[in-house]
Length: 115
Image (cartoon, rainbow, N blue to C red; front, side, top):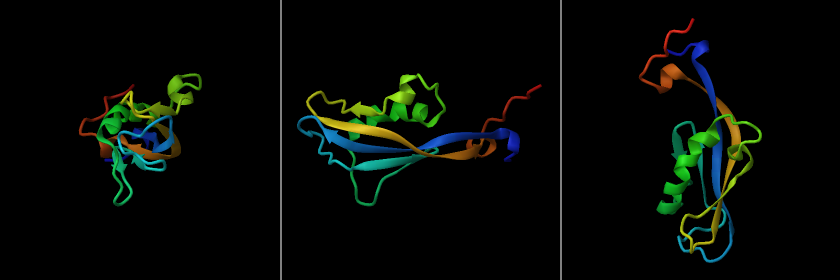
């Protein structure tokens, strides 16, 4: 059950291929992208995204969704190189908005009692 005291917010993200520093071996194209809203990823209809690049980007996304210290590299650094050392693709993770969630709607575990 949603209550005001179980609210939390996450950033929406856009992950986009922004530049090419060499040869794009994973068949990305500049402008290819996907979006993250809460725990869901959406791709534009008919667009593909390279599996190994996606696997490398996924661990960064939950941290990018959360508030971080202004000096933390997770706040300041947005460009991520393709994990294939021979591929020149660069991906940018951008915070595009915020949305509010309720713990009771996102987790099967109850919040602990708080004083």
